[in-house]
Image (cartoon, rainbow, N blue to C red):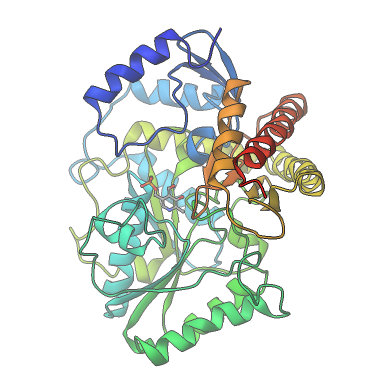
Amino acid sequence: MSIPGPRSKELMRRRESAVPRGVSHATPIFVERAEGSRIWDVDGNEYLDFAGGIGVQNLGHRPDFVLQAIRQQLDRYLHTSVNVLPYEPYIALAERLAAITPGSWAKKVLFINSGAEAVENAVKIARSYTGRPAIVAFTYGFHGRTLLTMTLTGKAKPYRAGFGPMAPEIYHIPYPYPYRDPIGGQPGYGRIAAERLLELFRTEIPAEQVAGVIVEPVAGEGGFIVPPADFLPRLREITAQHGILLIADEIQSGFGRTGKLFACEHTGVEPDLMTVAKSLAAGLPLSAVVGRAEIMDAPPVGGLGGTYGGNPLALAAALAVVEAFEKNPRWLERAERMGQRVQARFQSFHDRYEIVGEARGLGPMAALELVESRESRVPSALAAEHFATYAYKHGLIVMRAGMDNHVIRTLMPLSTSDGELDKGLQIMDEALTYASRQVQAAMPQS
Ligand SMILES: Cc1ncc(COP(=O)(O)O)c(C=O)c1O
């Protein structure tokens, strides 16, 4: 059967007249059913899922233990609003998250619905605690699509362009990008990148007016950029010296994605506030801000929350997810092994294909940066587009990332078996052969 099949095509036609184009879709395929790392579309085609609903399905689609927890909650109550009648799952998950996140201090946890909402709240809490207005974010960062979070985001198109004016008191410094920064190979590059903050204090906003610095430990949407190991520790030092809160956005990098529960753990850095979402609740909308208790308590009663924040079904799912990670070290061991397997294969792609400018990653949060040629390093959105299209037409769902949509990222469930992983990597290998040919054909002939 052709992909997309007739039913997907018909739904796409309906979609075009009913849904604004601003809501993007990485594939033209409509899903019928999903299980583990597999997806079936409405035309009966089967796919391996290396996108995981944008990093939401780290434990796989519909794991039994999550479904069971949701069903139990379904039979008790769906919604009272925690602002009216509180319920135990909210407290229980807050306690669990406080226990498993980095930082040995007392913590408190706020639940909201989306990643963007978590970031919004982290900023409010940081401002409330410090009494300072400014927030520093990074180029290549992605923090959401609300007014404040798009302002924090460091990618102009499509996230900011035309949506201004932006929110005030947000400043950006460059995210360390070893492959693209001319000084990226220099020893101590991570420290140098962090110290760009000091320059910002001198040139644009004095440190005493900065409430927080928000950073993704691995830049997700920006292209799975892994900063050097000395970057976050130096950022931690500088922020601490100036009474500025360090906010780690672990929305994409958390819950085993990098081989540890949270990406910060690779460097030993303990942020003051952390935002989590995505794989926290295995597909139900839930996000959280976890932070030092005294910071979290800064906003007054009624200053935080919302009608749906901490929905009981989502909390039940998240409790099952957290319990799975706590009780079963297999998940993180699997993540680490998977990361090694994927990265070894990606390295071989780098060795064999001229269009793979760089293969990189942290654990199974891995990426291929596609370029016109290794020498020019010109980003190739064309290669990435042909790659992704070849992949779904041959049974593999992948997502792109990067400033030019030229990076292929892996967000496959950690439940993916070695056999499934190798099958997906084989399709990627073929997709690179195909994309290489297309890039070659599009080059001006000399
Ligand atoms: C690091 C990071 N922060 C924030 C967000 C925004 O989350 P949401 O789309 O749930 O609002 C995302 C989403 O991809 C993300 O990757």
